[in-house]
Length: 129
Image 1: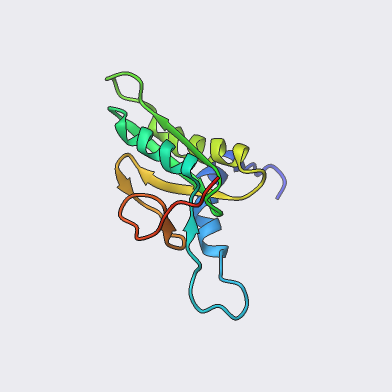
Image 2: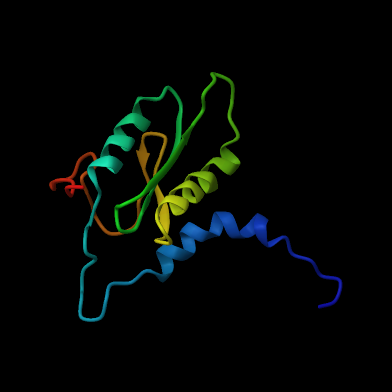
């Protein structure tokens, strides 16, 4: 394959959340996915994220302990192409190595992992810090 160059940075970032979702599976003997209970800090950050005029992406760690988000600070169009990867990157920087995935795109929930307790529309309580 001499002379063939593939820009892996261009393809890896958008695929990371997809690959994480595809590779995640319950532990042996479990038939259902265990819920993710977010901390009070993550819940407060999500509520603050929703208050921005133009929220972009909100990511949470798969253990509910970390988050990352971004928003458009001005009324002009923002670069959404990199915003998703940036939210995941911020979350993973704060998670100590635990994988993160996007929970919401603006105010629309996209989470495809196990049920999340402690955020809007759930039936559980956030875990104490």
